[in-house]
Every structure is written in C-alpha cells, then in structure tokens.
Image 1: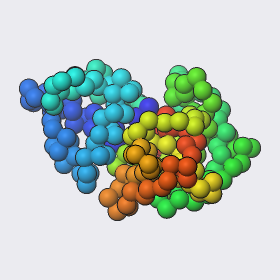
Image 2 (image 1 turned 60 degrees about the vertical axis):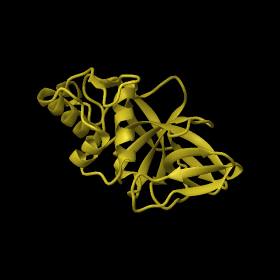
Image 3 (image 1 turned 60 degrees about the horizontal axis):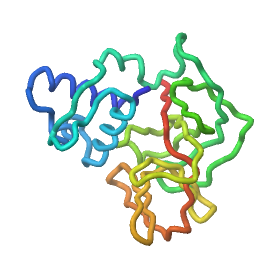
Image 4 (image 1 turned 30 degrees about the vertical axis):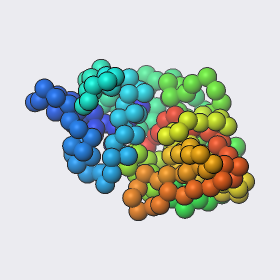
Length: 212
C-alpha cells in the first residue's frame, strides 16, 4: 500500500525514466513534489524501496531502478481493504500527535480492518494521526498508521515514541551519542532532543491507511 506522496514520486520517476537516460537527483525529486526539504524525499524513496517498487543501485550516484510499473501501484494508495485482499482486524488504540506530543489514548475495544499484506510476524496496532508535522513523509492528519509493536528501532525509522512516560508522538528517530532526537518531517517544526533514557520506542511504522 502506497501513500499519495509515494505514488506521486513513483509517477515522477517513471515519467522521468521514459524521457531521460539518467534518474533525477534528490533536488529534482523534491522540486517535482513541491517539498521543502530532501529529508522527505529520502523517506519516500526508502518507502518505495521497502515495498519493492524501486531499487537503489549501490555505489552509483542517481541510480534508481523501477521494479514495478506505475499501474501496479494505482490501486495501492490508502483505499482500505479491496475485495481481493485478505484483511486483519487490529486494535485502534486511539489518536497520536504528529506535531506537539500528546498522550496516546488507549481503547483496545475499538478495531480497524487493514490488509494482511501490511503486517509482519509481530504484534501490530493502529493509531489515528493528529497534526501535520509528518506531511513530508506522506503522513497526513486523519490518516491511520499501522505500527509494529517494538521497543527497538534503527536510526531514521518512523516510530511511536513515549517521552518521559507521559507523552506519545510519531516522529523520525535520530540516534546520536548521548541523546535521542525526534525529528518532524515538516520544516515548521524543530527537531527535539532528549536524554536517551527519557525516550521509549513503543513501535515502528509499517503501513498507512487513508480514507477519501
């Protein structure tokens, strides 16, 4: 399942490949999608690669190979579960801020249906997004994110982070010597830094559902 921005980038890469011998630069991709920074493009490219739509070739600049055509992704933008897809019911635990952190609500009585293909082997849950700080990662207010429950994550992963055991937020995780950064994907918001033991990872983003 692709977000709208991921689909836009795949469209652009496909069109560019038909007209040019060299893939576009990250600056060209940023300008084509109207984003303010390259960090959002890096995240979108990584998302397309993780989902098998493109492949970045090692040790070659501007080298992106398209593995799946655009029409293969046409029905994969957050439309919920299609008739042909197997679905799984996940607990919708509440709402989480992609902006100023707020307490994550916990109401396991609510459920939402997601495609089984979005899930790995671990335990998953869903949260509804509030705020606009992750828009350049293709995550908009009102979206439902699918989270794999985990207490660990890599530098650059989008995670649910619990701050000082009180506030939960969805941000890009930055691991630096002696501290943890929670980076917004919107230039309006500053990256916030905390002592390592003040931030607990509660899960990693694995998918997104958008209703139109």
